[in-house]
Amino acid sequence: MTNDTLDRSSIIELLTVTPADELYRRADEVRREAVGDDVHLRGLIEFSNICRNDCLYCGIRRGNRQVQRYRMTEEELVETAKRAAALGFQTIVLQSGEDLHFDQARMCRIIDQIKRLDVALTLSVGERDYEDYKAFRDAGADRYLIRIETTDRDLYHRLNPGMSWEHRHECLLMIRELGYELGSGIMVGLPGQTVESIADDLLYLKDICIDMAGIGPFIPHPETPLANESGGTLEQALRTMAVMRLLMPDINIPATTAMESLHPQGRIMALQAGANVVMPNVTEGEYRRLYELYPGKICVNDTPAHCRSCIGLKIRSIGRTIGQGRGGHKKR
Ligand code: 5AD
Ligand code: FES
Image 1 (cartoon, rainbow, N blue to C red):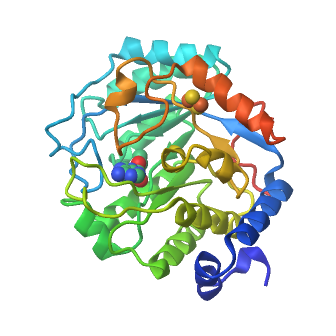
Image 2 (image 1 turned 60 degrees about the vertical axis):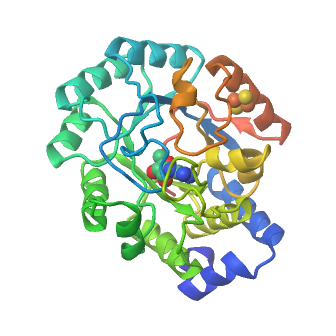
């Protein structure tokens, strides 16, 4: 059976019984053939940790009163983007909680200013209405990240009170229809999540033709209702990511920060098991530590310049190259 036609039961077998090193080797081979040795870097700016939602797993959920909340000003945000561009990042990712202070007009002004830096721009600001998505796209945003988190509807509704899986799915379809490159993904190791449902997640992501897949372990945050859950393992997350690569050989797959939070070499392991993207944090100062989705987040005391050179060295140390250009999804 060729990779792209893997069915549900072979996916489950790969996720569970195939020896991990064999799976990683296959994913690494498919990655090299389909997208080559380049690793594309994205500069991630976490510009507000204010969120209207109350997702049970998330450290910046509305109900967490322990978080010191922040919101960058437009000027701070654009300055941070300028410095990231000066460090050589050719994609800037703007991520925040669902903070409606950043309304359509404000977001469009920010997008317009950042696009003048001649970079690709990715947004990761959650669920908005069609008019917002359209306005952001018209203002110049190129890509959008919005994880589906899980395709198990019941699990989704338990974990995301007040939210609707169907609505989130509609958002993904709108984003794709508007011509954004669509990034989505899941968490692995959620309480009550089964390997069958992870197989369904992967098939779903393939079915909606995503351009990028972010897959990370769930890491329990002490100030959330899931504090005492066990969370995902690095192996589970790496396996899931590797199977994603087999299913969709030419998409972009980041080595996620959450993987490195579980193991000091987590991102390097991911790059050798199917990943071809890294998203170093370019947020500055105090904000880095305040954007705490999960505990043990890496690099909270480092500077953007430090992380840029650190990750550059790591990538070269495993014989890979830093991608030049914007590194969008090149469909084969
Ligand atoms: N552990 C791991 N990942 C998390 N995210 C949110 N909370 C956690 C957690 N506790 C992920 C979600 C979200 C992305 C921005 O971060 O998948 O979409
Ligand atoms: Fe931040 Fe290595 S990437 S210190």
